[in-house]
Length: 240
Ligand code: UDP
Image (cartoon, rainbow, N blue to C red; front, side, top):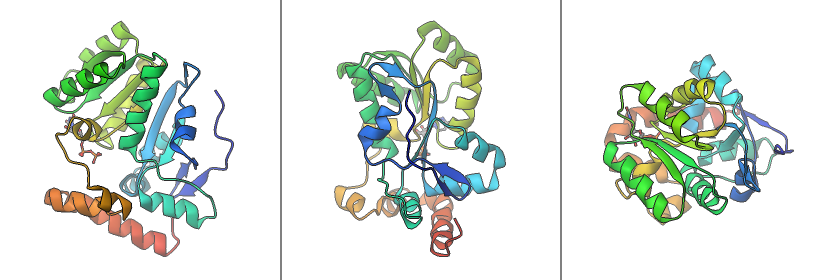
């Protein structure tokens, strides 16, 4: 499948693929019923900060077949290096990917989130015509259960919602075992999709203040959000 011909942009050691639109990013995964085998990572400032301290994670992300800027911080850093790009929120990308999978009859497996959330996400996708061939929640302790389902159901797209960096590490292990699919880490996306967690109101999104909304809604995230300020400081100092 054709790779994005545009130049890659380094952000804090991560090599980002700049995309002009959601459709361009989707084309890099599914086109004419063909699925790019490999994996994708939606890169936000939190992941950039984690990867700066974790060379194995950095190397893993840089080997991804799709590395797009989710999060306004990363989009701005890419733009500050003179490269046009658009923000592709991971959550929206996942929904668009599922829609395209339905249109092109590509089989999908869902891994992660709480048992009820995982089951509801699978059900809602099936109602929209997605061929969900397997679904395993994220509190399953025995990874062999996931492996068995993978080989039995042979999905072409596998999305993993365990939060970063745990989902990235699981994807790495699963790909060695079953490489014939496109894998994507999607964080809390199934929770948002099924209405268990509210997405920030549109105004917050428009102002790129979702991080602030999430902090107010879940104050326990403060530890994680500190890295956002660190990212912002590095961005302003042009150290990314
Ligand atoms: N999760 C899981 N198993 C675990 C820990 C977390 O399935 O052992 C799920 C959790 O239910 C949620 C998702 O992982 O659906 C991560 O959500 P979070 O908002 O932390 O991820 P983010 O989008 O911030 O990376």
